[in-house]
Length: 465
Image 1 (cartoon, rainbow, N blue to C red):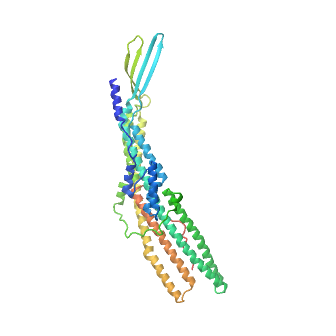
Image 2 (cartoon, helix red, strand yellow):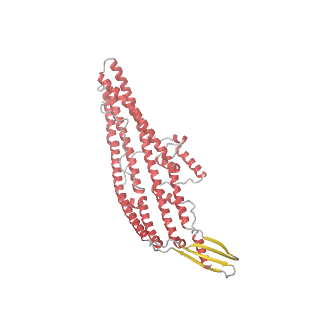
């Protein structure tokens, strides 16, 4: 009886594992704050949701910048809120691992003629008590892995939102320039029609101006649809709907930075900061720790201790204890140990592979970042100024009656096309920078490609003149 009491006391002390006040979201916020200077917010109550709505409406009341868009997404993205529930599930497993199975009690009353026999027994899970510290530690490791994985999802949503913001603003700006191209084409087509009507314009030149106008109208419709689609993508990531979806975006993308970041120690930073690398290493460590538990319980499947108290009419009371142990006759646990060893080596190699891929992805992301910056700067410092200078010279010649109005309009269209190409280059740079940030701190950003797509609506057809 004393032994049972001692075991029950130990179990009571071991069962003190409780839930944390924040459910583990605090550690996730530490991860995200150190990488993107943003907090993860878990909306558990109506008060939390009300506060999030208030902050959201304050942010969307003005033209939405990229950082503000990320804040809105981290508050309202329902996919993230669903991911936060994984924290609660993992923490519940930690608490459960720190608690023993409830003890068992059996009672029997048997009668033989005038004799009555009573049998009472308490059963207690001794193996569960012995392995409780190890099981709790393993679940705590899994909880830490879950926190890292959820933090990675937060970073992914933040990066996706930032990329969507750049694409939406660029598409909106491109649609404006596409409208200007259509207006210039319309004016040129109308002038050509009037000149052709009085016999001062050939049918071939008239047809060229008309088809350019028709193509410009089609490209404007395509540009407006692209702008709508990019805006809706951003809206979905921010989790907005109803009146909140009527947010405003700035008219232009941010200007290029004066300098770019250096390439020093980027690989080392990725190995130190990337969540997928840290998670792979933690998983290997967790499996290494679990191998100790596998070896200890590989052939001891059930070990229970019970206290028996029997009494029978006319006989002295019978007391004692009972131990139930399954004998390792058929299964000595070798297969379990071998499986654990192979699983551990698999995790080790996966961690090494993740580190190798992280280094490569950082190098690739940095190369894309520098290329995008150089291209955008080339458009800003060379192509756009040259186009502007050409337009000024064309205007002077037009004023001196040395060039026709059609040449003036064609040059205006080409200048707009150059500006639209610069917008694309700006967008590609900011997206490349977002990919680089993700490659350094989060997880694999995917293919490091400059975002391409359909030709801009402002691009002049090959036969434009």
